[in-house]
Amino acid sequence: MRILILGGDGYLGWPTAMHFATRGHEVTVYDNYLRRRIALETDSEPLVSLLPLPERASRFEAETGKRIRVVLGDCCNLEQLLQTVRETAPEVIVHYAEQPSAPYSMADRGAARLTFENNLGATFNVIWAVLEAAPDCHIVKLGTMGEYGTPNIDIEEGWIDVQHKGRTQKFLYPRQAGSLYHTTKVLDTDLLWFYVRLYGLQVTDLMQGPVYGLSTPEMDLHPELATAFNYDDIFGTVVNRFITQAVAGVPLTVYGKGGQTRGYLNIKDTLQCIELAANSPPGAGQLRVLNQFTERFSVNQLAERVKGVGDKMGLSVEIRPVDNPRKEAEDHYYNPAHSGLLDLGLQPLFLTDDVMSAMLERVLQHREAIDQRKILPRVRWNS
Ligand code: USQ
Image (cartoon, rainbow, N blue to C red; front, side, top):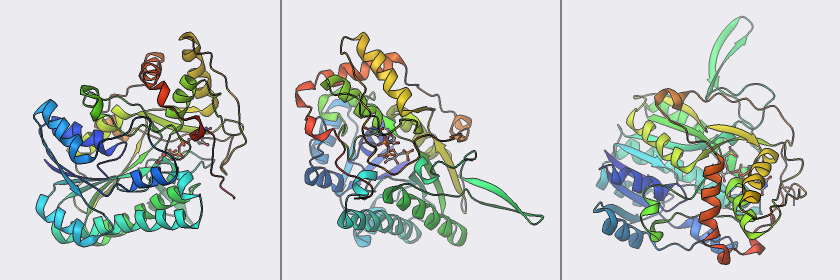
């Protein structure tokens, strides 16, 4: 397949590009380094610094003989994006090109505006680039489980049948996100659904939970092929943060009561999910929504498990709850469906003790690079 990966420099974008290129697909990555710029501005650089994309692609070619074409461009520039879509004639576009940090989106007015304009502007332009230059292309879009929030009823996979006064209609499942970032993803979904309904686009919208991990077969080929592994409060997701905190000897930062439950997945499973979605397009005029996670646990359960494995490795891990910087339910019902990707063939890789100890070992190799000033929360939701 000809695959265009928007946001191909990111935590998920770069491993996705290598994954598809290794399997013989024709891969182009497109990125404007927005995440790198925000990381610099907010003092949130990843654990190991990254080569520029063209140099990473050269390293990948040297290791595998496979080529990844790199275009440095901005999805918010429609002409630039259109040109790339015309040149690459993609059969699949994987759209990751969004500001992905909930805390950043809540930092101040400037960060909120950037998140809003970038995320909605990018999705709008992706839609129009496809309509004008590749109308049969399948858009695989990264949404988030956070679109649903934490309702007090079961979460379905994208859609729900509503019965009202004796009649029934299928609607998008109600969404109520807990940050502006998550809300931009809600708005993306509505925008995509509009263009699917009225213009016949084909879209898979993946509601993904927090991802963890720093190893894929391709990343493991050479240190210069690593992805952006963040442990700071801005870009670091909770599993990656707790693993790094355990290594640094910093008490694990459970926010509030720690009953917050989410659906998690290994970065290797993200790659499986994207590939499964790309291999089975939903068809013109279809919006397919899949809930993308493999297991769920609360923040407290996660902290206890990291402590258990860390202690066995001699790290003596402490857990110290901190005042929750976010506005979120700390004790809630959470029962989301997630059978769609399993039906497509997903073989989950769970967060076992072995997986955690491999992550701890890997982060231990970079212990000296951990900057403890990046760990405690620096953004409060209501400030
Ligand atoms: N949390 C802690 N301590 C920490 C960090 C986080 O208790 O040190 C808690 C948070 O309060 C939250 C939960 O852990 O309840 C998950 O937080 P997170 O930072 O791992 O995830 P989140 O901010 O929701 O965002 C991440 C990605 C985002 C993706 C989302 C999926 O950054 O791009 O969309 O996970 S989901 O959470 O399902 O919406």
